Length: 92
Image (cartoon, rainbow, N blue to C red; front, side, top):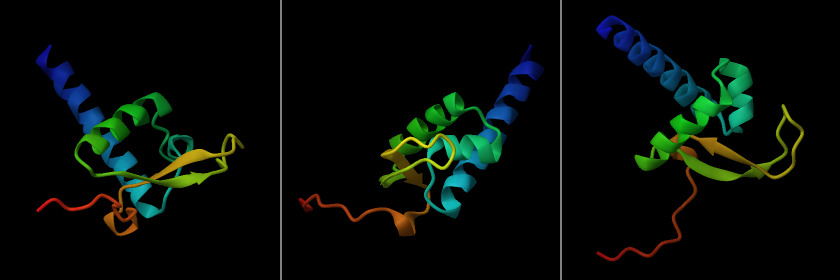
């Protein structure tokens, strides 16, 4: 049983790294990362949530998805150089 758990953890780590790296190259939609990495979009949603909790990914805008053709789809990046400037005032 523990070997199966280790396999699942390894699979999670591998997928997580693929997703992180795909978003780092340049801003993309989740579906574009799905197609590029072959990681299911449903899993990418979980990874994006995890990355958002640690401020390691940012929504940088909206555009037409190259895969689905839907307009105004969120594009994300894990590259901190591309994160939008915060408009929140500093308290300290």
